[in-house]
Image (cartoon, rainbow, N blue to C red; front, side, top):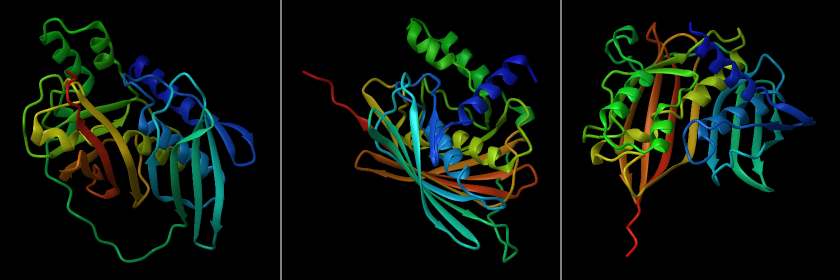
Length: 296
C-alpha cells in the first residue's frame, strides 16, 4: 500500500481516537474532505467510538440510529456526551449527543449485544465484477475534472481531495456530468491500509465509510448531483445494523438503491457484503435533495 494510503488511514484512525475529557465525555476534531461542513460519516463514526468506550466487552455495537441536526463547523472541536441508558445481561444502550457551540449537531442511539447463536438467513449477494477490474474513485474523479473546461480551482480541489477509503463503482457515476439512470449502484470499498485487529475499530470505520455514495443514489433518476447549481443536499438521518464481524481493510461490496423520493427528501438503502458473500451490515438513510429556485 502506498505511503499516501497509510497516511490517510492513520489520519482517520487519529480522528476516531477521541480525547477523553471526563467520564462519558469526549472531544474530537474534523477534517475537510471537500464539503461545506463536517462530513456526516465522520460525526457518526466518532459518536460510535464515544458510545463504544462506555460499554464493557464482549458486547459490540449491533445497531445505531442517528439524526443530523445542524451542519458541523470544521474549524471547531466536537464534544461527544454519552448517556448510559441501559446495561443488561445481553444488551446495552447508549445515547450520544455531538455538540458544537453549545448546541447539538448530531444525536444518536446505539445498541450493543453479546455474540449469540440463532437462526440465520440473508439476501443473496449481487453478482457483479470484482474490484480488481475496476478503476478507483480517485482516478475517475481526477479524469472527470481534467476532461472539463473552465473548472473553478475550488471545485477542482474539492473533487480531487482523497480520503482513507478506496471506492470502486461497478458502473461509475460522473458527479460533474450526471446522467439519468435507475437508482441502483454497487460500490466496492475498503480502507487504503491495514487496520488494527479490533472489531470496534472496524465498526467505527464502516460507520464512517457507509455515508459515502448513499445519498447520491437518490439523485440518479433526476440527472443531478452535488455540484448541480442550486442543489442543496444534506443527510437527515442514518441507521446501520451490524450482522456479523467483518474487516474494512478487506474488500466489501456496498449494494445501494433508492426506493423513492418525495417532498425534497430521498430515501436510500444499502446492503454490505464481504468477498465470501456474507451480509455483514445493512444501512438506511434519508437525505435532503432540494433544488433551490434562483433569486430574481
